[in-house]
Length: 255
Image 1 (cartoon, rainbow, N blue to C red):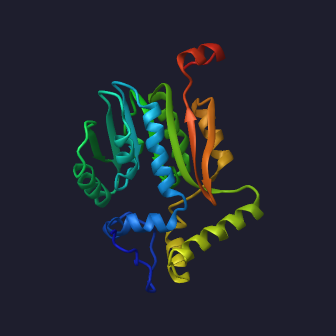
Image 2 (cartoon, rainbow, N blue to C red):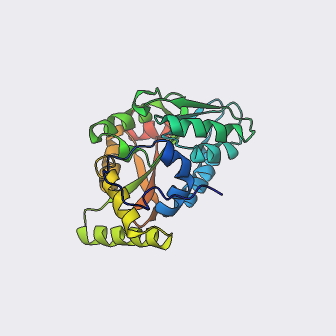
Image 3 (cartoon, one colour):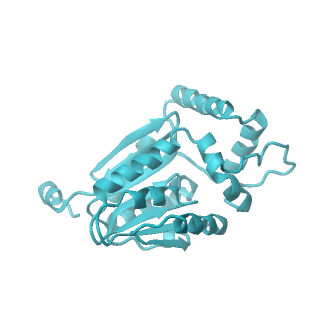
């Protein structure tokens, strides 16, 4: 059983900004299951998408891999030869545990786990890229540049999976889904103090976007096809497809 998340159960005198440190890494599996509605479904579906999109002799990337849940889901579902998964995170505590988790399961597909800033990673020969609740922690000015780089590094017909917490242009809907998310956390055993303290720590480091903003960025990067494929309350996931060579010729665009 994962360690129970009680990091914010007692009052904290001085709340700083959120960091993915040793304490967070220690309880992360419990934290994310109790905080992110639909997380298990997204991880499972990433595996299904991997089976469909992984290509022979290609790379698959898990950018912001944390403890490697998406990486393991991808690796379990690769059915073709000579693939490699590259998993990247800038948190030493997360990377240390991720390596242990990956090493605990034997599989034919090699995984390279890298401690680095995802903005500085080269994306190349990629059939699939996953950004699972990662983009929201980047400076907004860096988000378009990263998506541009991902698009350029994807093979024709490749896929990007982008999971995020959303905000909403309709304030009434946004407030309702925000409240429902807090109800979800309460139902999973978090107290009002825990919810409040965690929210305060995240305010300056996690800046969310609307689905419309995400789609606009994806289209600017070059993706002709982008859509929300999963949503639960104010959390969800989009897929973006790079045109195949045939589609690009038809559309008169460069792949």
